[in-house]
Length: 124
Image (cartoon, rainbow, N blue to C red; front, top):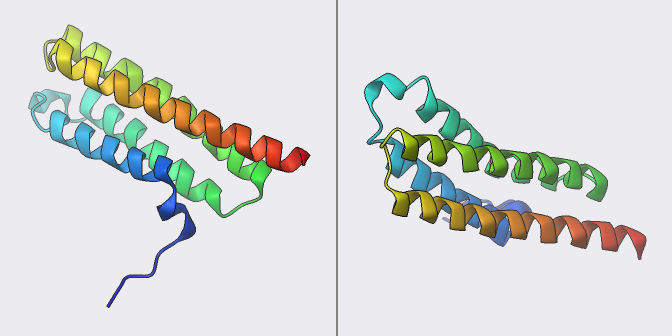
Protein backbone atom coordinates (compact mmCIF):
# COMPACT_ATOMS: atom_id res chain seq x y z
CA UNK A 1 0.00 0.00 0.00
CA UNK A 2 1.40 3.37 -1.02
CA UNK A 3 1.49 6.14 1.56
CA UNK A 4 -0.58 9.25 0.91
CA UNK A 5 1.52 12.08 -0.51
CA UNK A 6 1.23 15.79 -0.02
CA UNK A 7 1.88 18.18 -2.92
CA UNK A 8 4.93 19.78 -1.32
CA UNK A 9 6.67 16.40 -1.24
CA UNK A 10 7.00 16.60 -5.04
CA UNK A 11 8.92 19.89 -4.87
CA UNK A 12 12.60 19.46 -5.77
CA UNK A 13 13.57 22.10 -3.23
CA UNK A 14 11.81 20.12 -0.49
CA UNK A 15 13.62 16.91 -1.50
CA UNK A 16 16.97 18.76 -1.55
CA UNK A 17 16.25 20.21 1.89
CA UNK A 18 15.66 16.70 3.27
CA UNK A 19 18.96 15.55 1.77
CA UNK A 20 20.63 18.48 3.50
CA UNK A 21 19.06 17.49 6.83
CA UNK A 22 20.40 13.96 6.35
CA UNK A 23 23.92 15.31 5.81
CA UNK A 24 23.67 17.48 8.92
CA UNK A 25 22.55 14.51 11.02
CA UNK A 26 25.42 12.41 9.63
CA UNK A 27 28.05 15.00 10.45
CA UNK A 28 26.72 16.17 13.82
CA UNK A 29 26.69 12.57 15.08
CA UNK A 30 30.46 12.92 15.39
CA UNK A 31 30.38 16.26 17.23
CA UNK A 32 31.57 16.15 20.85
CA UNK A 33 28.88 15.15 23.35
CA UNK A 34 29.20 18.51 25.14
CA UNK A 35 27.86 20.14 21.95
CA UNK A 36 24.60 18.16 22.10
CA UNK A 37 22.63 21.14 23.47
CA UNK A 38 24.80 23.73 21.74
CA UNK A 39 26.02 23.72 18.18
CA UNK A 40 24.61 20.27 17.34
CA UNK A 41 21.12 21.26 18.44
CA UNK A 42 21.29 24.64 16.71
CA UNK A 43 22.53 23.18 13.43
CA UNK A 44 19.86 20.47 13.41
CA UNK A 45 17.07 22.92 14.25
CA UNK A 46 18.16 25.35 11.53
CA UNK A 47 18.50 22.57 8.95
CA UNK A 48 15.12 21.01 9.73
CA UNK A 49 13.54 24.46 9.73
CA UNK A 50 14.25 24.75 6.00
CA UNK A 51 12.15 21.66 5.20
CA UNK A 52 9.49 22.49 7.77
CA UNK A 53 8.92 26.01 6.41
CA UNK A 54 8.67 24.76 2.83
CA UNK A 55 6.10 22.17 3.91
CA UNK A 56 4.14 24.51 6.18
CA UNK A 57 3.91 27.32 3.65
CA UNK A 58 2.99 25.19 0.66
CA UNK A 59 -0.67 24.79 1.57
CA UNK A 60 -1.30 28.52 1.84
CA UNK A 61 -1.78 31.36 -0.63
CA UNK A 62 1.18 32.28 -2.84
CA UNK A 63 1.86 35.33 -0.66
CA UNK A 64 1.85 33.22 2.50
CA UNK A 65 3.98 30.54 0.85
CA UNK A 66 6.45 33.25 -0.13
CA UNK A 67 6.64 34.36 3.51
CA UNK A 68 7.45 30.81 4.63
CA UNK A 69 10.03 30.50 1.87
CA UNK A 70 11.66 33.64 3.22
CA UNK A 71 11.86 31.98 6.64
CA UNK A 72 13.39 28.91 4.97
CA UNK A 73 15.94 31.20 3.33
CA UNK A 74 16.72 32.76 6.72
CA UNK A 75 17.37 29.24 8.04
CA UNK A 76 19.69 28.56 5.09
CA UNK A 77 21.78 31.57 6.11
CA UNK A 78 21.78 30.37 9.72
CA UNK A 79 23.06 27.01 8.48
CA UNK A 80 26.03 28.71 6.80
CA UNK A 81 27.34 29.80 10.19
CA UNK A 82 27.06 26.40 11.93
CA UNK A 83 29.62 24.48 9.85
CA UNK A 84 31.85 27.56 9.84
CA UNK A 85 31.92 27.44 13.64
CA UNK A 86 32.33 23.65 13.53
CA UNK A 87 35.32 24.05 11.20
CA UNK A 88 36.92 26.63 13.49
CA UNK A 89 36.44 24.22 16.41
CA UNK A 90 37.89 21.35 14.32
CA UNK A 91 34.63 19.32 14.44
CA UNK A 92 34.48 19.22 10.63
CA UNK A 93 37.07 19.49 7.89
CA UNK A 94 37.40 22.34 5.40
CA UNK A 95 36.12 19.92 2.75
CA UNK A 96 32.99 19.13 4.78
CA UNK A 97 32.40 22.85 5.30
CA UNK A 98 32.78 23.45 1.55
CA UNK A 99 30.30 20.64 0.86
CA UNK A 100 27.75 22.18 3.24
CA UNK A 101 28.25 25.59 1.64
CA UNK A 102 27.69 24.20 -1.88
CA UNK A 103 24.47 22.52 -0.76
CA UNK A 104 23.31 25.70 0.95
CA UNK A 105 24.03 27.83 -2.13
CA UNK A 106 21.99 25.38 -4.20
CA UNK A 107 19.10 25.47 -1.69
CA UNK A 108 19.25 29.25 -1.57
CA UNK A 109 19.02 29.50 -5.36
CA UNK A 110 16.15 27.01 -5.50
CA UNK A 111 14.17 28.83 -2.80
CA UNK A 112 14.79 32.22 -4.43
CA UNK A 113 13.68 30.86 -7.80
CA UNK A 114 10.48 29.52 -6.29
CA UNK A 115 9.86 32.90 -4.67
CA UNK A 116 10.33 34.66 -8.03
CA UNK A 117 7.98 32.17 -9.69
CA UNK A 118 5.30 32.83 -7.05
CA UNK A 119 5.66 36.62 -7.38
CA UNK A 120 5.48 36.49 -11.19
CA UNK A 121 2.51 34.13 -11.05
CA UNK A 122 0.67 36.65 -8.85
CA UNK A 123 1.39 39.50 -11.30
CA UNK A 124 0.14 37.57 -14.33
